[in-house]
Image (cartoon, rainbow, N blue to C red; front, side, top):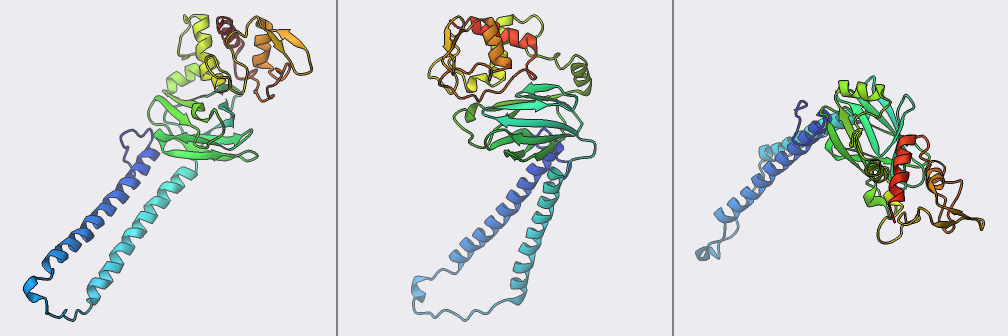
Length: 316
């Protein structure tokens, strides 16, 4: 059963979790139909017949053997379920030796990723297939969740604490990460991806500074690239392009406008202001808005910042 890799499971761990649930469902179903079947059978067989209304109920004595088996068998079944469940749980909680550690910090409403070699990213984690990965999880503001449904694992992210979670991806592909704790208005859009690459592709990606493998490719128009980066980096969880304003200023019409700042000053939203607002958002805080935007200086390369600025310039 330990070697089961269930449909939709991205690792052997997930297959074992599925096998545990299947085992419990099969055992539960068997005993349900057994007991209910016997109940219906005896209800029909020993039902009271009309001519026998005055018959007295016969004296029924217990059967020690049946009572002993009825206690013994369910007890063994419960112990088996507990033992296998304990094995699956400990397998998920104790990381494999040599697991690569990836730091993930959650904040409203995005995931900041830091790799062992110092590389950073937003809402996207890339790992090689076939090698264990240990996630060191923390939160910068409120409670968040880190949930990988394809791996059947989930862990809370708690301010002031570091929690851990590990997986060993077996299948290359892109897997969704969800926040499972209601963390504010942008909770439903707090999404990230775990991208599992073949070892060869991962090595090439690392050699190119984590740049190769971007969705759009090198010939992607700058504005299109900027729109994609803006969406993937979680910016639209706080900033609106269309419709109702969120906790940050609307982005449409921002370029070229006069922006009032805290302290009574104002500034024109030119290219330099847009760039500075991405890499050092606390330098010029817009009046009436909280100073909660994180810096993208380390996580967004200059070329990506330039692409985002070019996209913002098109939002008239």
